[in-house]
Length: 182
Length: 423
Image (cartoon, rainbow over all chains, first blue to last red; front, side, top):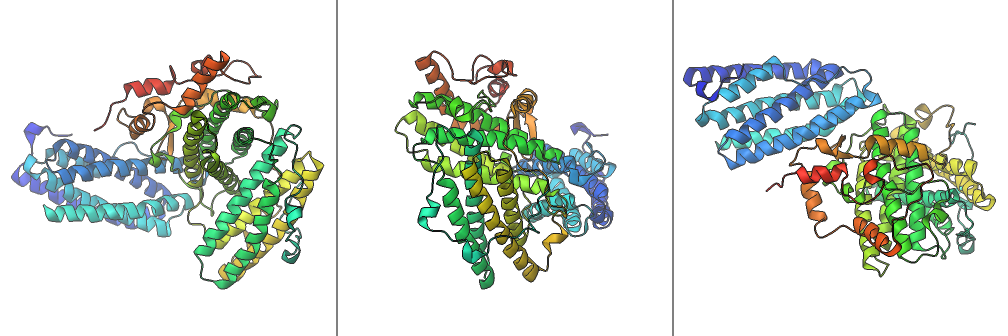
């Protein structure tokens, strides 16, 4: 359940959230490099959830950041992950993807926790929290896309991964640079 | 009836080059020609132009002198073929009359392709485009009257294609990112999907080339402006259709697929042509393309170790691309999807776009001060007392376009009014 602004996590809670986010990110990367790199169903599910997370987090960032550079980055996340969402939906409708299950329309528990932590971040810690999550999330997405592009079991989804991988690699580089500049 | 280009024998290259008088031979009679003969001529000119441009681009990207020599040899023959085909069009056929022919190609070619497309997403891509070319036909038909052409557009198109408003051209103008679709893959797509896409890309590309080159020839400012506006839409169509092709296709495989497509289309023209002299052109060119295909297949085997027989249909192709009436089909598409626009690779009703979507900003910028495709209809109404339409199947499927082909009261107009201006 999302916390309100009046119940911002301070001090210890914020640190605990950050640790949990990091562990979640590590877990995500393992999944991305294993099942996500081979199974079309796992890949598509993970890719869709990743996009939903990115768009939601970026919308939060647009409301709360006081940094022009973070705002610009957040807008780019909305644009690029919306494009990726559309491309994945289009791929899902093609004969080449056969009987893939419907794509998720909500984030999973792990990304829900990230969003909750982002929402709960104190104002003076928001940008740091957002960018820390962005680095974690994009490392996972890069692993997912590059892994599946090389080893995936569905040509159409591999094509999607191949087209998306360079974009998320550039996102990761941008977020790492922004985080380092904070 | 099946046709397998891989097993047929063609004309050797040293017998393919022709003299100037052979190339600049007889033309068709613009007043007597069957509309679909004209359409086949326009289409195959576009196919040859694409063959030539693809060959030039490939030559610019390879250092292999053997490949460059093969490309140059075949390309010279393709250039001669292009001349023979395009020079079938007589000088007495005015640019605007030929333009009507181009848009009839776009409507009836794209409709056939959409009806014969195995993939549901790609079918949507063709249906999306066809309503725009359908509208271009209607706008140019109105312009044709205003230019003092001695014929009505229906005398060019015959009884075969209705001339009615489609998705209004004013609303075709989208942000460039909204022309980029999801590509098929050569590994997993049906061969028909590949041939379909290559064919429509070539046709739309030639239409774009044509309008962007000759659109400045009229003196009338409205005519010049309408060609300019529609040429910009054809750029969108080329981006849209080319984006469904697999961008990772290896160069020599791409060449093989181009030649295979040419064989299919010349065979299709030969099978369906009603003019005996022009049928002879298709037959001769098919025999040439068979040899071009053989050379490309051989080179691919030597260089990449790929055998075309392993992935091209064993029994060949069974259905010729056929120009035929698609009136009911197009009406069905109009009924279902008139108000669609594009958002990245997806097609959505314009009313579902976010109010601050880039579509509305782009529309504001390009349509500021007036829109030629709207002006041409208003001017026709003023000078002739009404719009030009050629309607054989009953009232327009869409109420907002029944009385007027201009933008008022269309779903687009309503969405535009609700849109917010971004900073």
